[in-house]
Length: 238
Image 1 (cartoon, rainbow, N blue to C red):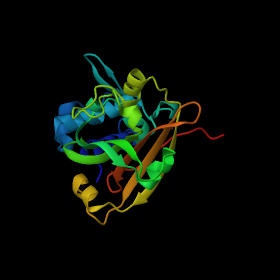
Image 2 (cartoon, one colour):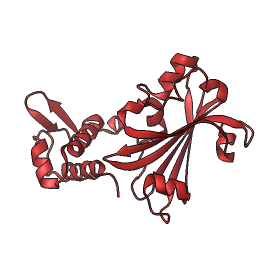
Image 3 (cartoon, one colour):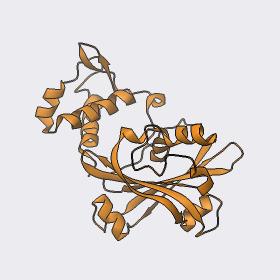
Image 4 (cartoon, helix red, strand yellow):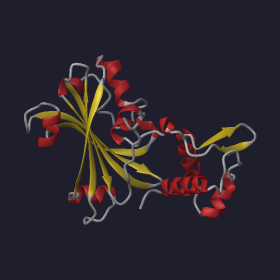
């Protein structure tokens, strides 16, 4: 199942689309939502933050939160977990560092980095926790020389996004991401870390970051339990 805050986001979006909460109307208060949906205040706060960031509602100081309606497509933030992890500070999500150091590259990641299979690269892997439950396993792979002189070995969450950190420390410039999405069954360790049944598949999102010349810089891998996540994107019809 999706995290509780995500379920609340979907429930409120459905009510807005159905006209139960028409544009311009005042959204129920945090206390009312807590009482009606039987969830905690942090869950309500997280759901309202998502709705505000996506343009469904707006906050007015001293008045409350007002419904704007379904946002225009340009206001919808595409659900691209690879890009989000590269851009957002690690401190914006709860979690723990489960691995950091030089490791042998898996074949798929080696191909995305234009490296030899089983050659060494730097890995930073973090288990992200949302609403008190394991949500996704995020791995950042990069050449050893690019990791030197950075804080990627730190056990503390980074106060800035990976993109900003590598730009400030190493002077590299991210230009574009090539994203691949596959599905597979989890390993025993992945199932344990994510607290999921072994018979539920994973969605594996690979984002290969390249500079303007096409040189691979970083690969981010996001493992998502398929029963808790769905991927959504919005784009113009050409």
